[in-house]
Image (cartoon, rainbow, N blue to C red):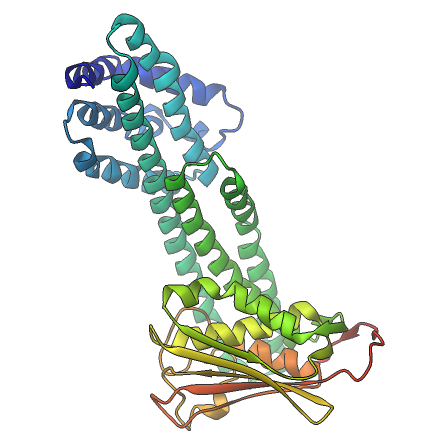
Length: 415
């Protein structure tokens, strides 16, 4: 590898910076998939591209480029922040940076290679790796900051929503009219918040399924998907509460294996268990796991209770799960954690909406309220027990075991 040639490539790109920017602007203007930039002037549109060219040149001129990537990261984060504030879509933020990569390689690196015959083999591979890594870092850091800005905005909306809900709850006892207004408000606002998240999830899943996606980009996209899924889950909880209070929650009942549904829920929360290094002890030893239930809703209950156990269990804690039958008519699941426990005065309120236990945590405190409504709609029970703070807690889910395999007709929950 010839460091002198790499340094000269950096100077070459820097000398042609205005031409590179011009080509990029023309590519953006010709691309019909870009709609957000149309209202921006030249300075706003170009943003930090001149600084990126400067920092890329410095990387090529450095003998230790891996130690000089912090400038790229800072530039990328400022860029992502500006693009969110300028009204860009996430896919536009990613695509415009990909165009930079294409222009650099197809137009300028190739041109330099034609002018400098010694720019070949190992030296060229090194240069290409440096440029690829710089652009990948730019995309990942820009996307991460973009989503952080989006999360801040969504958090503000959630805070406003929580304040509005608190006010409605205070007025609930005053009149049925206020309660009905709250339900309509929840349904409408939750729907409006949920709608823009769907295309982001579809895009993130498509990127992650693409085999050629760079690993560093995949990491950023996975972070996007996790945060969007969290917001979608909060909004879905709001929609469920609106359906339950309005008597519009439908149950599509069919003969099911409750053990299979529970294992599916365990798989969905596996990543958090691994992250917190929780010991999961599972003993599904009931002799009859057959139940007549709405599979998606019962799986939602299992997921909510498991997530609650994970939330209040410290790292390297234990969650023990067992199933058993009481007679021929009952199937029970017990989920016991080694977490914070529940104080006696809180136990009667643990399944109330907006109840968050010992201390505020992420979420709106709706999961257990929804779980209780779903289980009771199935003719079952759910209850909690604990010896107090610091002693862990046990949640028990009781369902009616199915005596035969005759599938029932769908039923609708009444308020």
